[in-house]
Length: 140
Image (tube, rainbow, N blue to C red):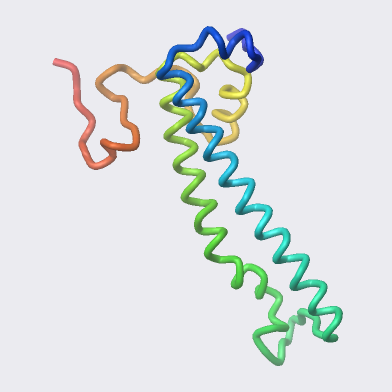
């Protein structure tokens, strides 16, 4: 499949539905970047504080602050949110492919990263955000 780069020219030719899907994907990417940045900043802060205070992580810690998994523990909320965002990204990628955006290079790359099939699902098998509880319909 030949892939197209996302450019102003390509964007100008997209339908409203396609634009909405790409906007949704962009918002999810921004949220994921923000969470990753928070984790990185906090990790740097903790590492700096540990050095300043003379603490270090140890295989045989004498307290919670010296445990080698303390960073994972204190960033668990953000890591959980990133996991949830990944599932939202998968659903949005499926939707992007189904609305005809599977030819875009960014969609192809992200489908590969998120293990999403880059070919449209049959009409009756399409499931997105609002109908996750509904069982898939089979065409008669």
